[in-house]
Image 1 (cartoon, rainbow, N blue to C red):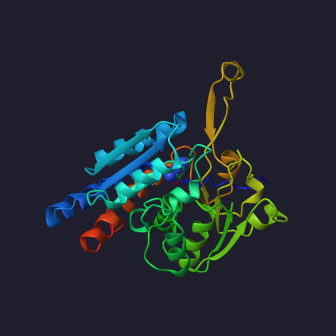
Image 2 (cartoon, rainbow, N blue to C red; image 1 turned 135 degrees about the vertical axis):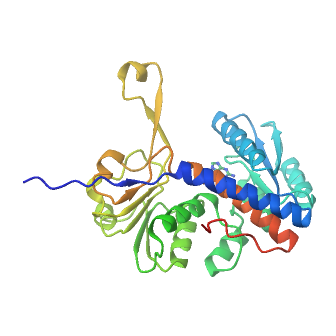
Image 3 (cartoon, rainbow, N blue to C red; image 1 turned 60 degrees about the vertical axis):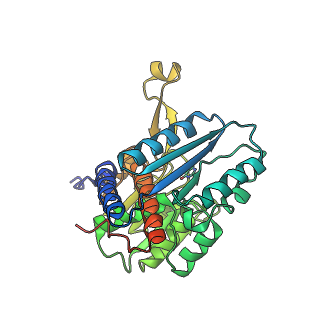
Length: 308
Ligand code: GUN
């Protein structure tokens, strides 16, 4: 007898994020009507990296679609650190701007940490400032990095109460792994953060009710690493050669996650696809953070954007 295969439910981050952007737009319009404060986001990009240019264009378009003010500052890659710091000081002082995002990576001659820490923590919509990392760690209101915030929203939407669940996060970056761990701890999960030195990673992953993959290695997490019925959140966005050898020879690529989706979706209970899972949530959460920052400036309690 062959084992029965129940394919995983696919978590549709694209649809969820579209709804979330609509709700942010409504909430922002209502904030502006009540207080005159229109949420404003400034995005700063230094240099010509094509992937970064695309991300920044998408951010600007989505911000405008949500009816918010969107300013994009495009600087040449010859910009000095002092010039960039001067722009950030100007944006910190601009009362029409509630969120500041400096697109990473920055050119090698600029110290990214010095730049990120120059952003006012209350405008730090990326949540990368040490003050916001600290606020998250001790459970104070701050601004939370967008990708882990988006993952948490999907998890709560899918599973409701997360308390007592075993969560394994693969990857310990400041941008995803560490803040994800703090968020899940805040939801009373039992959290383990795995990384490149972890022993028996497959065995550890098999203990997870919630598995978050954020390592940046294409299809590293295999189907037999996953516990039956687990919820799998794949943060990876990796470009690999097309499956079709002719197209691959022409340089055509496709995007895959950190999880071997086909195998994993036969074992998991729920899983995010790549693309269309976590990715679209990141921009939506950037708008959520900009709205939240604007509400705080206006002295108004933000609407609960996830209320049904
Ligand atoms: N580059 C790639 N992802 C991100 C992000 O989430 N924020 C910033 N600032 N830069 C990035």
